Length: 391
Image (cartoon, one colour):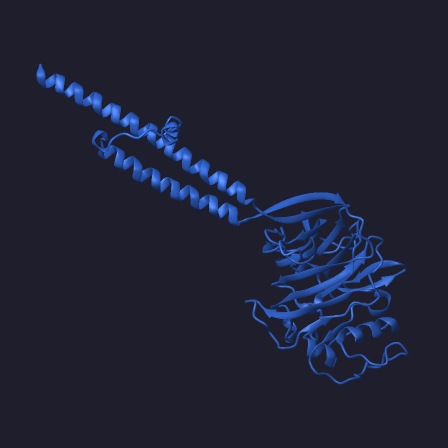
């Protein structure tokens, strides 16, 4: 039986006495072994990574919320000049916003000026006109300085006083208003340094936090002036603000529309826009793609990714502008009807085994051919040298 099986042996062996070991063969063996280990390592690394399958389908989800994470720094624009608003595609303010959005005063070196952090309050623009809430301890009810009404019996913030004065039709001077002094807005909106009063001209502002808005097209913007709703129009009052002193340079540390998933790229995060002078309008047009990510452990993450294009324009005179554009940072976003589904999958063990065998077999085959070529070459060279000596 064993003698019959020997006929099928495709790997015939030679006697040890007839085997020839060469230096070139040893070098080829060492090199081929190193190559095998390196290629096997890469194959193992590839096998241990997760395969991600991408599937496109129509987004049929409804009545969802979208989380917008914001961290933007304005190095030379004080917090007292900035108003933050969010509106839907129709231009109406979004009144059911859940948020934790704050404004932090900074010096020119980016350090925090004061311990108080202003929390931005989103209400209906027709009712609030940019109300802010300071998180420091303040009296429960503060004076509106003669502008009290049924709607504004108390004015806990500087902006509340401004709103009360505007409703009375009175001009507003922040000097002496304790709420404005506390928030650092007291010495005039962009007043002259020559007046002898300290100003916020040498301050910056960091706007950070998140918004939770309706998942519909809309926009949010960070712009100077006081915002309010007038005849169904969104209006910014730039009274007492000198346009030529505005500088809308900004650094976007983070801007995302949902939680982060592996290998996600947010194109606006860690970017900056610097203007040397003049009031500049920066308008970002964002295309949001809803995404859902399925992990190996069967958990899922609903989030969004986005692409962006940018437009900027220097505003020389707001009154002469036919388009009534304002300096500031504006973000207009649209929601794509297509959703992307990412599914993590474990790579096939069978594929890893077959690939590893192919690598090992291929290297051995190539190395044997190379060894045979080197051996035959050395033999021919040796014969020629022998013939030369004989002659």
